[in-house]
Amino acid sequence: MTPILSNNYYINFNEDAYKKLNKYILDFKPSIIFILVDENTNENCLPILLQNLETSISFEIIEIEAGEKYKNLDTCTGVWNALTELGADRKSLLINLGGGVITDLGGFVASTFKRGIAFINIPTTLLSMVDASVGGKTGIDLGVLKNQIGLFSDPEMVVIDSQYLKTVTQRELRSGLAEIIKYGITYDIEVWNKSIDVKDLNINSLISLIYRSIEIKNEVVTKDPKEVGIRKVLNFGHTLGHAIESYFLKSESKENLTHGEAIAIGMVTEAYISEKLFSFPSKEVENIKKSILDIFGKVNIEALDYQAIIELLIHDKKNVAGQVNFVLLTNFEEFKLDCKVETPLIIEALNYYNS
Ligand code: NAD
Image (cartoon, rainbow, N blue to C red):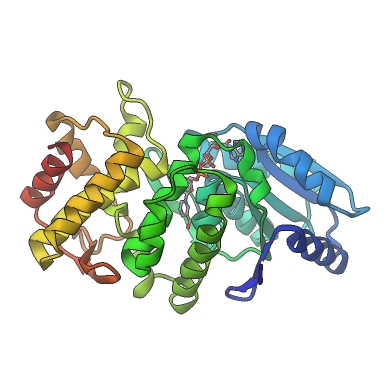
């Protein structure tokens, strides 16, 4: 697979990617290599990486606990302390080996440690391959508020190796599929058609969708690295989706949703709002709802939950001057940015999802 050039770094694929990684290390000569993992990627992914890493430079493993609830400042402090105790300096290299939590948090830790050390992303979930590891957004949550603290900072390289997906659960694969569906709806109808038709979530059925999704994400973020314009399209489904994800994260009585499960609900509700405000075809709204419910099942959002979800919307990073901003659709592959939506319509959209 041909490497994809992003803003001054390459996204490399499979065996070729390890050759590039080893060459980078040979040329850069880091003082120490740190590999950031969580308990799952330590067990399932580190052996694959170590089999492919050819270097005489010493390395240290730093492990954090798995899951979104650890994507916070306490975990960063733990990693900064570990780097300090293990002798990291400005010539050290951090390899982030994991899902979006590892690549987001690891990128943030590296970019702020001693004013910034080099880092490389090796995404190991479908979601982090097609979305989180590319585009330079790094960061952590503040309480339940998603990605409130962070900075744009590019990795030296991204290594995509689909082998890592062998141990990812079906639920986590579906989570990544949600972002692929988003690219399909907003950018490439062929991706939409293929993504809702994936019967069996396995590596072979996903390989071409992964490559195309990375191409789309990269095309958008290279045009608008700091999200002042077109990059906002990648937030389709994420305005309500993030609020719902945060709400489930903080609610003790509800099981956490994966990022993709929350975004899937966001896409159904935001497609509905698109129909009401911009005449997005109603049969396509139905089609999106049906396809998403078929893949993700129905999540129970009660009317009692609505108010708290709407309150969380006001913390969305995309807001300007207290105004919540949505990405809405006029058709497949056609969208409008910075759309204002009144609360009653948001409630109607949640009711539509529930109906
Ligand atoms: P995650 O990192 O929590 O991974 C999901 C689970 O899979 C974890 O339990 C993890 O330990 C496990 N896991 C990872 N790789 C595995 C493997 N190969 N085998 C077995 N288990 C494995 O979550 P995620 O879904 O990868 O990413 C979600 C995060 O990404 C969110 O925090 C979201 O905000 C962020 N994100 C960031 C961007 C961005 O542009 N920076 C874009 C989209 C999402």
